Length: 407
Image (tube, rainbow, N blue to C red; front, side, top):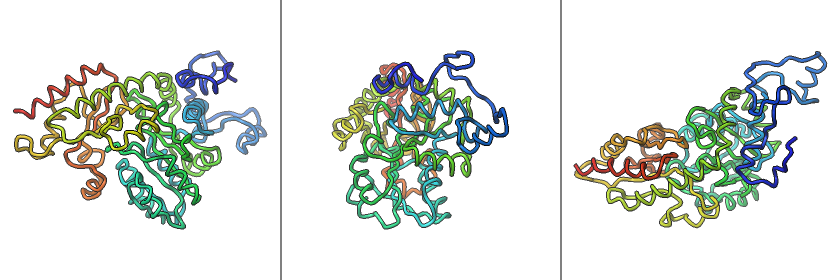
């Protein structure tokens, strides 16, 4: 047990100490990597007790591993949940929630602007199992209420959304959903703690692509589901470790544990850089619109200040003006993105490096054009993840990149 009261410490201290104790065998300060597929038992009787859950222990790493458990305990503490199950990817987390909590005949309400793979699963995969989904703008509370059916079991959304950075009022949606016995699942990838705490705001389950800000170093694929003990146990036993088989490797969990220890410091820099770049883009004559909740021009700025604890992450999107020097928007986007030197063209986010991508042809390229446009993802939209570089260098990179539009 920890010598400090983790309920009385700040977020940075919690990120370092929660879930972690020196190794009881050799005193290792860093959590050991238990790189093993199976575990041995002293006796058949003890093995039976572990399998039956009568005593704590591990039998097979797909079902549980000490390194993974340390990471799960840390994430649960940081999000304020009772339990967490780690998965091998963000889609492993999302898929495990769907497969663990839904059954044939159920109905889901989903945000219309979500990660392309999440949309694909809801539209194409779950329909094979008799689960239907209504897609709508979850920031419109009246529309959500009107879409509720007798068989609605889940409301799923991202806030901020990917990639248009629109917000959903988590408290308002949760209050409405719980009147009807509906679970609320929030993808918190874009605004992890210490920015946003969906469970505190009333949500039932939080999912993360831990690949992004949670790990923060661009070297791990991971995911997480956090919620109450009963829901997480169901998701773990019925989906994550069985039908989805999405248990992470202990080495990857070790790397995420390492990354989490600097989460508070990293997020502060991401937020600082994000706001500086968003303000720069808003004043750039080639830019039509900037999507960033930290700008006072954002229609949900007041909600963002309250719900995101006056921090706004490092992710944004912006649209180029149409017809720049006679170019179509797609050509203009390619010119700017290809001209960037410090920023790398990549589809992830939350890395130390600044990353940029074109959603219509990359992350959301598998969505039909009419669906993309309905979700606000236009051909002239560029998504940007501000890294940890000096903000002056990021701004200088965009200054030289925009110069290509003048020639």
